[in-house]
Amino acid sequence: MVDATVAPLREQYHIAGMAVGIVAGGKSYVFNYGLANIAGRKPVNDRTLFELGSISKTFTATLASYAEVKGRLSLADPVGKYLGSLRGSRFGDVTLLELGTHTPGGLPLQVPGVIHDNDQLLQYFRRWRPAHQPGTYRTYNNPGIGTLGLITAKSMSARFENLMERRLLPALGMRNTYLNVPAGRMSDYAEGYVGAGTPVRMKARVLWQEAYGIRSTAADMTRFLQANLGLAALDPQLRRAILATHTGYFQAGPMTQDLIWEQYPYPVALQQLLAGNSDAMLFEASPVTRLSPPEQPRQDVWVNKTGSTDGFGAYIAFIPAKRLGIVILANRSYPIPARVTAAYRILTALARADSGATQ
Image (cartoon, rainbow, N blue to C red):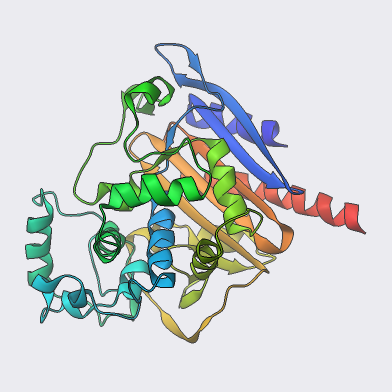
């Protein structure tokens, strides 16, 4: 099934290399295809590092949730409690929860290009005025979750990259996942490709680490899937933190907005997934309904997140009730509907096979 799904994708979208990780039946599987580097003719293997793009946001959300479990912050707190220079400003009144659910009131998709450091970023936030009342519209963006990452690091008295690379990732058993790829692993770092095959990799910009900076292998990402499916042996506080990121806070059109994760009642139709992962949900403001009280983590849901950089495209999804999960990594940013459709085809087939085996 994986072979039959990946082959036409690679051909249609001229994808040099792909890796697919699957969790099913209590086991993990990795399937590698094509080339990580065209010029060097280097094949994709279990050590190949792909850029995750915005799937990185789910790790930042996990770290923030862990800080809350540890009593270092509360998602109900306003930004100004942690960033003193923003006290009294409109952005200072935004809550950490609103940062982590894309509902602060209308932030741009990217950090404006004129901002080159965190001091300039805070000045920008000081002048910022919301287009909508916080908590009423979802506008997908990098600055919000990026700032939540900054605040999380400050609350835990450490650098964000150290918290991620020395604490969270090792605790998840992810030994081949990085914000900063070590020199000794650069040969495993896939080239991304644009156009007719121009190589490209992510460039460091303000909030890149917090919003889209992780590189990982398909094998390591199956460990992240296991952690989110409740199948991994973890510290109890980390387990609680991960589960808490699956809490539903807002109804946003076809999907429920969790802490960065997006979820749908399961079983779910492909068209609903495509609507929730559409350009409209990515680029346009969508009215939301606050769930009060928040919806507690459920088993009968499809949870997902997309991720893209200029040269890479990724998608991750899991179904807790079925103990099924998939991550698809590619060194080209091909259309999101194709990623969602591929994952849906594979997981639906596995779910049907599992149901047949247990009847």
